[in-house]
Image 1 (tube, rainbow, N blue to C red):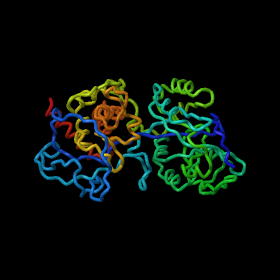
Image 2: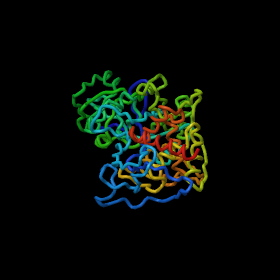
Image 3: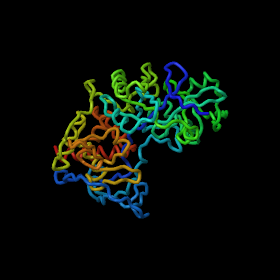
Image 4: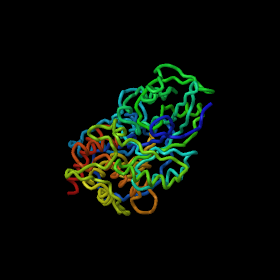
Length: 441
């Protein structure tokens, strides 16, 4: 039978359940527009989403023959189109996501958020508890997963049951790039932690009969670096195994704040839960890009000092020009013209707020998961509203800053690429940004 124990042993054989989820940047509702618009004449408007299109003739960014959703004039001169020639609509890149693709062997757009803490609860963590943890100082991201212990021929295995699209951001980058791992989970197979595979003598490709449960095929192994976790299965397989839902949480924040994070989370949860520090000896950095460009952490400026996203209340400016300028203060070193360019490309400054077919929403076209991690209350009304330009524009600055935009140069280009995984998108944004710099010196 499936054992429902959820204990974590720092050196050995026990279980932990985890959570993940990182923000994905907007893409599918992209408005391919070259003309520089008069920002001083455009007033931000807070509006809720229209009813989603239901006809086959609706604008679809994945279809290059579909109409331009913002009705932009593709003959208008501007950056990237100085002569005003008619240009064919450009097909946007696919929506950035941590979800494993059907093809390909790596995950170039994935922003790694290594876990600092593994929280184990005796019962499912409530949404309120997770929200309370997410609001603690230093906490940048949380997510929960199912997990528990099963037995194979009397030998215990501690498993996590995960949504690969969310969990992929929590593993070392080298593991995130192993497509075989994510394909195996999608097929309902078992991926063993490398240390557990060696310790238990698991044979890859072999099937193992769970005591009182289904058979599991050990399809792959990888180093997850999570204390006490012997392997990973998909959510559906976890349900078949009877693993307890939502009993574990992964917490991401600054590495140097791990001790403070642990103390704060421990005080909030009390003595009934376990809070375990993850990594600290390189484990949580093993899969991170050497250049650090894929890590959603405060970047460094040319002076070597961290460029942290600031807590800035922008109020409710009367024009997009004022809003973009105020919002740039969230990320010292980021030009307001980059925000203006992204706002033009994504929604034509609020003219086409979506939702897109992929679910991107609002004037800056955030995916809800990304918004949960990076959305801010820009106008101070107590709500971070994805549809409000007064919240969405400073949130875009927050997201860009987390990906190194304040450093400028190649770091800025990479940060924009994280916003929408297309180098043609990066070129368009930078061209429009230069146009705004010339128009509003």
